[in-house]
Length: 455
Image (cartoon, rainbow, N blue to C red; front, side, top):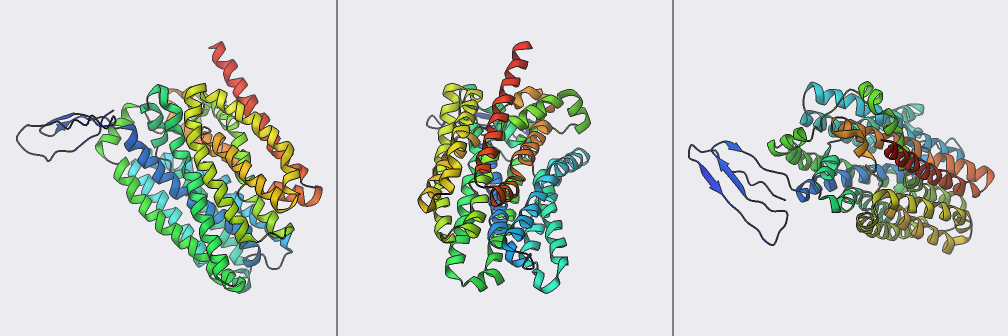
């Protein structure tokens, strides 16, 4: 592949050749006057994907961890601990409900103006909502208004996350060598464990260094300030990539442009549904090993929260390694087979999950570590597993909405449902939830295979 090195505009014709035999992503470029043509290297696209996803997931997990550790005390002190946590998780889910709406809205903004305008507005909205939460007074100071504002900010975060879709993962998949598409597909997914490790480390440090009262009064706000700062950095880093002539041209040549949502569903609606359910096993597991266990530890375990966060950080590091391994596995055995096998593994894990969670610190730690490894292996290939079904015209919008619906169906209500059912009926429902996600994934992959055989 090749990398573009821009030449200054002059009246003279210039020819620049930069061979790099040690770097397979380098290229030779000829520039004649102001007329240049260059291909975009998968390695360059991967940089934009990793930067964008890491910043989004950090923001995502800062809120998720706070919803388990902080918000029940700060915004629901008038309720019992369990009820306050359930309401906190209900507000947590609002972002996943508004995310598809944000995708639709910002697709229209991109069609009306351009991609850079869309990204600037979306990430500015995300940063504003995140900073708004950081400055938000608790229930003790402004009463129910704090709950209204928290809900509004959370809805705004979801809209912004939907609008931050830049098409780079699809461009990466289309430009990657066919025999290494699994490897390139996992790169963007690395943002999840990396974002979680940083967010969990911040909360572990603050909850250890500060008294409980100071942590609830002001300490929890610092991760939100950090998330805001990271959003600003990510905005400029991504804009620097996606608004260049080379990327705009490449996205245009691959037809990675927004299409009307109604037209998408009329032409490819069944593939949107199949794509959402094909990733459900990993999305169902996502919050069952990250957010839900924190609430369970706080409410029903004697294990210290900072200690448990350290275990989760170790699990996230294992998940990062598993994400990388998933690329090699998928390239060797194929992405559908990899996802199906891991869905079966998650189904088996669902049978042991209740026992592990209910057997003290050792069992809980084993649940976290094994769960994170399975999450990394499955989530590493979950994104865009069936987006080839959309074809060139509908891939840009189809991939975005498929991801939004997978999050909504599989992950949005996972902490709320798991905690509510387990608190009232026992830990066995954690296994039921995970098993349902695994069954949906295998069914969707089976339907997708049948449709391909018929076509």
